[in-house]
Length: 162
Ligand SMILES: CC(C)(COP(=O)(O)OP(=O)(O)OC[C@H]1O[C@@H](n2cnc3c(N)ncnc32)[C@H](O)[C@@H]1OP(=O)(O)O)[C@@H](O)C(=O)NCCC(=O)NCCS
Image (cartoon, rainbow, N blue to C red; front, side):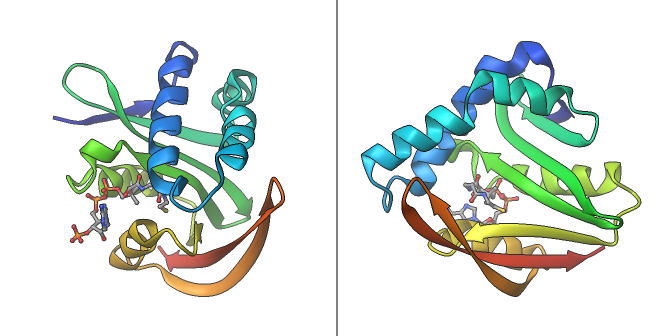
């Protein structure tokens, strides 16, 4: 059984491992090894994760299995008065397609009851992510260019009305 709880400071190391494993599985097919190293060093810096965990404006949730191991993570924050950005939604590769992503998204929405719109940016080659979002009722509202360590990535911006 999977339970959802807020990420705590003592979770930091495990959070970094889950993000790294999932991130590599998702993006290593189309990013260079050098870019991957730079990005993971930056995004998974424990100090950055600590800031996010301690920030009262950031909702940072973990899905844990029956052994209390983290199997999925979601981060969300308000970007407009009634719009929430789902900044991260990651489920360990071997735990995907078991409803954990849906559970995390539902909990984010439940915890942020003021929201009217939820926004997500999914890299255009990330077909898993796009498929998940479409299935959850998100629709495309635009595209955005991200420059990640000299690599230009196109993100599909998707929104869902709550
Ligand atoms: C996107 C993600 C969070 C979904 O989590 P999940 O726990 O697998 O999601 P659920 O089990 O609740 O939903 C399953 C749906 O997600 C999509 N999906 C999940 N894994 C997939 C895969 N390996 N291949 C294709 N689609 C997949 C499909 O739409 C699937 O529905 P289906 O099984 O009927 O085809 C997960 O795949 C992930 O962590 N991906 C890497 C990070 C990422 O892309 N994040 C951005 C998403 S906003």
